[in-house]
Length: 103
Image (tube, rainbow, N blue to C red; front, side):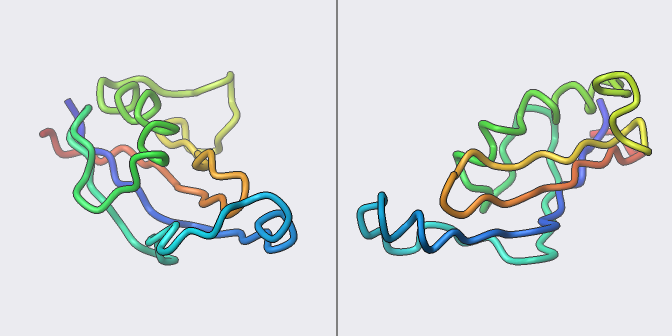
């Protein structure tokens, strides 16, 4: 099984939606641009948001087991995926990349 590098690539913040619909939350997201994680299969990396992990774990597991080319050519790199967490107020985009070393 391959290790998967997960990198925070982009973060959005929709204050208008937060003001209108969200109850106040302290520390809703602790991701930072460029932060990297290494995943070993289904093991959620330490510090990874639960919601983000739920959004990406199936892709991580597929890549870790040698899967590639999601959606017939979606990504330029067949051994990668760009996945966003499911937070509609402050979505974070993560780049998943297969590393050549095994777990």
